[in-house]
Amino acid sequence: MLTSDLDEAAQAALLDNLLRLERIAEPFLPGTPLVRGDALPVIVFSRRGDFVRLTGKRSFAGLMQPSLQTNRLLIGPIRGDLTETAQHEYVHFLLRNRDGASLPLWFDEGLASLLGKATLNADSARFEVLPSRLSALLSRDAATANPRRSLNRTLSLALLDELPSNQIEAFYDWSWLIADYLYFGVLEGAPVAGSTLEIYLADRSLSLPAHLGVSERALLRELERHLQRSKARSVAVGPAPAVERRFRCLEDSERDLALAEAIATQNPSRARELLAPHLSKVSEAEVSGAEVSENAETNASQQTADLFVAQARIERLEEQRAESESYVERALAAAPGHAGALIMSADLSAGNCIFDPQDDCPERWLKAAGLYRQALRQDPRRYDAVLGLGLSYLYRGQPGDAANYLKVAYQRAPWAPVVNYFIGESYRLTGDTRARRYLTNARNWAVADIWRVLAEESLRRLDEAAAGP
Image 1 (cartoon, rainbow, N blue to C red):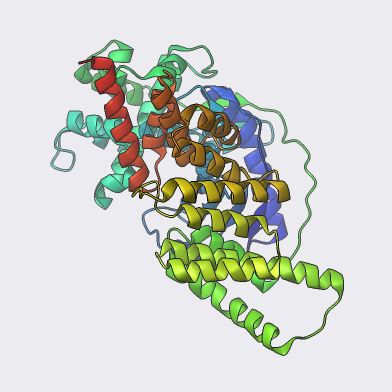
Image 2: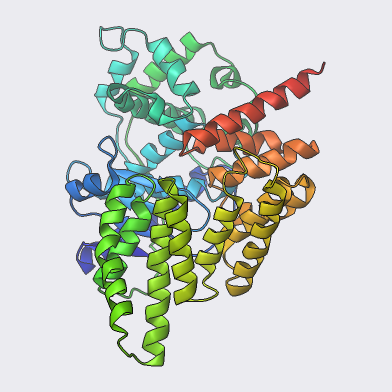
């Protein structure tokens, strides 16, 4: 599902390109594919300034937003072109639809860069010669100072926000070079299935140089030789499958709601500004009491509830609990049984019990569980309610029961760091050896620092348990 200010021809061309990319990417992806859920929302900005203004992100041209219910790609142009950004972010999405792989950040970004820079034609994909500028990574001039240290930093990095802005481009270049070397130097191309690289990504008990059986200095020499021998390569692909396309101009309220939901986490103040005029209109309509048809009233009630729930989320993100509860109440008054409002009410009921448990938290989790179940009766596809039920069991001391729900949530959103953390934690508490893989994914894919910190703490406890008394 694509939302954009591009013209219809440009939107169709972008969709065709992503469908071709999916075909060429499959042999490059480790692990096994999982069944897809609902369509992936993609928001594409034709102007770089719009992307920056709405997301507040100046160092990136695109964002993959991995979460349970509203996974999105936000894409803006880079150097005037949307294609590379779209392909790069879509590879992140494809990687998060795989089971059996634990992806370090350098691999996630490296493969996205490798496939993102491919030129896709009707029946082939072309990988160009690696640019000579990458040789700067391996030199000992004043800029790089120590290639070995830079390589180690790249291989150990868990979160891009840990890097100074002047080192981000070098991280992407290192990741791209390493990925190109592994696929075209070590493997001599795809598929990755059954290869030593896939085995490494499923375990990662060793460092990458140790896995390759070389020292760090030897790996640097191998990367330098690979760069010197780089050549263009073409891979045959079939034509993109035919997809029915329907274009519709969004109402202003639909457009602004979609944008507000997409940027709420990164830029809540701007999300609030987008919703404000539409909330004002709702208030005016409530005062006027204008009569409408039954169908129109039902649609309007759902749209009004959607607006209230979006605003409730913003208030909660900004720790305005009372205001958030007020908007949830208004949503349920407008559309009784609205699944999103019920889930938000349950989330508010649980409150901060995950991070700051109080004596009344078991009762609060029990109340939240009832609301999550009610939401699922309204909409069985609300996997965020499934996650909530899992948490209600986990934090009432029943990790085994929690895992049963969390596994369902994982099948829907294997890329979501929150889901990986909680299923990993439930497995850790029951002594299941699968815990490390999920907790490692949670650490590597964390969007918010809190989930990375929690995952690292659980991994530390696993290490302590493995070491024994």
